[in-house]
Length: 95
Length: 95
Length: 136
Length: 136
Image 1 (cartoon, each protein chain N blue to C red):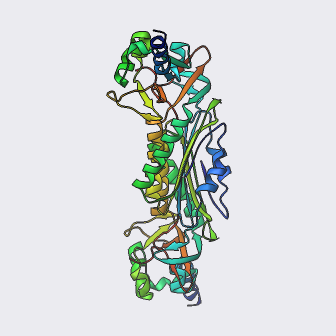
Image 2: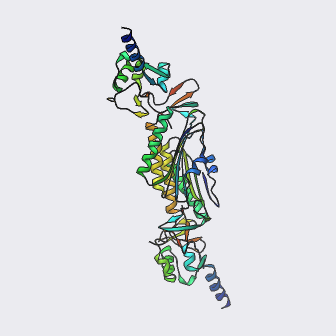
């Protein structure tokens, strides 16, 4: 019983996804990084975007919303794993 | 008779046209400026070009030949007067 | 390729890098902070970058330019941090044998930079501020 | 407008002139002496200008650019005399609110300069020399 609890605990902790935030999404969330609880069962880019918009409707009002995985733009159907570096990319405005 | 000679002399001297030369036309003629004798009766840009090509056939072999009158490109039918600043413009190659 | 993020752009460094005895043409684009935007007086701009990804994207753009045009050297430098009107924000530069390639590639660099590189700017006016491009 | 013929081009002078708190975009084109031309090694170039007319034509081109694009400042400087590989020959530059106009106007300046301005260059190779463009 104790062993089972430990396994569940570790699984939850290890599988928390951390999302890096920049620009306006820092202002919207009031945070520089966001933890996605494992029990949300988010496995794709599309799933992450939907969850974010539910949590923070202001994110749904942006001109565009992209997700980068390991410093590369990801497609909606791409899979997410907790080991990846995941970042939310609101509309860029360099230059 | 002496007065007539003087008038003819002055007319010739005053009506000599001076042509400024640049670039390859300096090399062709061996001169920086060219005098067109009044007795050649050259009155247009076209006439000047024809005369020049007769005197220096190498000028006829250039990619283009323009004439500037008072620092402005002139057309073939434009008139020339000895009072103008006249320059021969071989193909330009600035830049 | 001279590709970096920096606090302050040094134009002479860019020219020294781009200069080459083989190249006859150097085109550069410099973006600076305007004192007006959409009718409002701009006090300052703040630039934030997702630095590792921004560098990766800048290098990708420079590589694509080198594949697309016969060019010798490519420079792209963008600032991060706070900038006031008149200050340099970005410079793109290309050297090539002939001018056509230098103009086209330099234009490509700045156009692509504005589309894909994860850098964000916040414009500060006298009484408000806004993340540029954030909303339709 | 900064329009002149000179012995030596100073890039910083050009940028100082073009910079403006109103302008967000500065495009410049720099032409330099290439060490090769049509397969031959270039030793030096000699530039000769019909100076009063060259200045008049350069000013005309700058004026036409100002009529055609919404631009703030225009610079065109060309050298006269002898130049070695790597040295600057010509610089054109434009500042404007947005980048499109700066690229297009700067390109126009150098394209027109090469077509109409009475300046001639002689290329010196190891064993010969030629007036560029003189023959078909």
